[in-house]
Every structure is written in structure tokens, then in C-alpha cells.
Length: 124
Length: 156
Image (tube, rainbow over all chains, first blue to last red; front, side):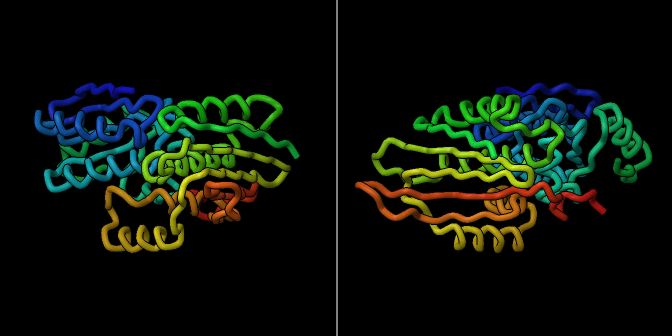
């Protein structure tokens, strides 16, 4: 299981989570995100389309990323959230922390707007 | 009521074995839950969390792990039993620890597993079975009702 990163702006990357983010690959996720932060990425759009498994360890890795980026003015947002991931988001009330967008493109537009105006974009 | 069962003994492969099995069960008459049925997703999540817990934390000493998964379904409830031969742990105490940690640090990286399980089920219990033969036996049992859980409502 590996993640696919795509830079869509100088400080923004889309992470295609793939089938699972769980205790088996959470460390790999953190390490890969760390590399991108060091290269200047501050905003991460997590693309959950096609993701069948997000468990507490995977969610913990996302919280770790969030905690690291917040002081840097960065954001972590969710896009194309699949039904299994939505269940986790609801059960943990994580929607209060991570904004959700129907598509990666919608998330990108909002992040661009935020960068341009210097204010927080509206949540989907 | 329909009922399906399977046994697992390899902690390295159990997650990779369980998910396709649940997928197969839910696609045939064994466990007829529609893809859009919220019970299916909650059931998969809770089973995954518990098995992840067993893989990462359970103490089987030098015994070969034996994990038995049983699922039953009627019109209203999914009923799941997972038994294992680990030494078990104090579920209530661990839950208290997790709650305290999250109350202290909402963005904590660890400590949501048991809470997810509790929130994802309508009734859950964990207890040791009477000792039989030479090894311990623990049982996790939970029910998920067709009635929506309030916390799964649309967020306000």
C-alpha cells in the first residue's frame, strides 16, 4: 500500500489515500507527508475516493499532520469522502476539525481562495 | 436469521483475510446487507478496530492465536462475536484511560480505537469465558441496530 502525492500549487498537495489508511501503513503516511512538509507543502488535500478503510491509527496520523501544520498556517482538508470514511468522520466527530469537499477540485478552489484573500474558506 | 463463521490464526494476514471475507459475505445470501446500509460500514469498522487491537496489543504468550469471528443478522440487528485465546485486558479501565487522554488532548494521535467501537455499536461487551482446557478465552460481542444512532445524524 502506498500513497500518491500530486502537487497542485507550490504549497499544496493532493494525497490519494487509496484503499486503506490504517495501522499497517500509518507510519508510511506520516513519513511521506513529513518529506513534503520539508519541501514546503503546507496544505494537504486528502482524496478519500475509493478508500474502504480508515481506522483510529490512520486517523491519528492525520491528526499528527494537522498538529504539525496548524502552527505553520497550513491546512488538512478531506475530499471525495467515501462512505466508510464518512462513518469514521461521523463517529469521531472529526468533521469539526477537517473541512470536507465533494471533490479535489472543490477543495483546491477553496484553498486558492483562502490564499488569495487571506481568510478561511467556507466548508462544504 | 442468517449466521456465518470463520477462524483465523495468523496475525500477519488476518486483516487482509477478514476484509475480503466480509465483502464476500455481504455480497451473497450469507450476510445480505446492502452496500448503502450503514450497519455494514459500522460492522466492518468495529471488526477492523478490534482485530487491529488484537494484532497490535494482545498477549497470546506462546500460543498460536485462534480468533473466531461469528456474524448473525436478522431484520433489525447485526450481532457479532469475536473470540480469541489471548490473555485479555481490562476494557473498562482502558476506555477510561482513552477518554481521559482525549479530554486532555483532543488532537491526540492515539487512543480512539475503543471509543470508535463503542460509538459504532448499540451494545457492546467484552468478557473472559470460563476457562476451558489449558488456555484462556475472551469474547467481544456487539450489536448494531437498524435504527440510526443519533451521532450518525447530519452534523450541525
